[in-house]
Image (cartoon, rainbow, N blue to C red; front, side, top):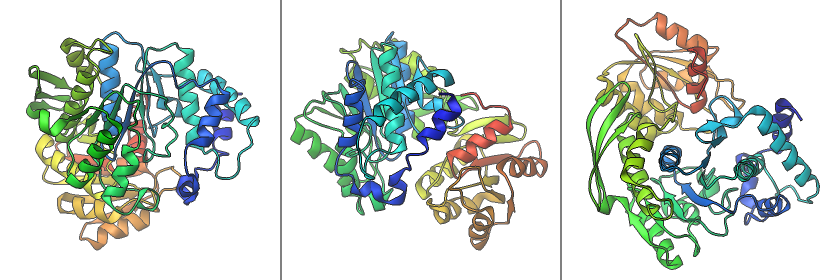
Length: 438
């Protein structure tokens, strides 16, 4: 099986959660059956399981980097990818090879062939998750950091007999047709990764106390010790430049002066959550403060307030809803001194384009709307219309690359250009500027 054949095979399994049929799956039984056929590759190593609405990828990458700095061989499983499916499965900080991905997909194919599942059975993400676990087992890793794909309770990753740490990052309303109509229902879905054989749970700062209470009750019911980051940790940005920020983190046992190569106040908060996770793993993974500092200083997580070009300043960020767009606007002002910004915007059809527009229009010089190559992308003309209705000067362009070229041609050397609306737009901008490697 070649890499291209592997992708074609995986995409035969329609992502039912996108069509609503994910709702019909009562549990992760089909995934467990697949993993059992593969010899339960998810077991046998220290496990960190990360769920949430915002920051779960960043926190996962930070904890993975800390574990590796502490000398642990570690795998990282995240989604989505920016440029290549192999990015979802990382060992030692590097994506697995296409050849390895194809080989592992062939193994999953053989296991699936022997299973009898109805149309509520396996989806693409289930198979990708199995590929990740197989890669980590084959590499004989000591640890794995696993980011939840969607929700938690019936997510493909919620298949561990036990885990050393669960992390719940900030929660907000999302995927309401699938996860629930209230913040409490969504919190319950995500907190379901906490079980009686979880050794500790870290609760990141929450904007909703109701959501936080749901997580606390889940941990209490499972008799799992909970570390509340807001209650026990504090953080402040001391300085920043285009390449990162200096953050002071206070926590029980002494403060840390962290250099973080990720920008944004939310990343400083994510770093505090990652430090809390490292503290919870201090004994089991033998993590010293030096490893925390080294791990955070070397973390990579592209497409999030990432500087792609300096003159004019081109920034890529995967903001795709109102709240993330508000954080983006704040960061553009606070970190880059931008009052007026040229935006290149694309979005998937199920995202909150109106929320994006309402947060970004007040600082928009002009908006170049583009349709990314993703099959669920919204038409550029529709995006331009939404921004135009809210007072922006907006044009629609046939591709992200061409929109970026128009934005750069229309901008002076001191201008700020921001690619946003989805990670896929950020990825296409990165590739156009020669930064396809992650």
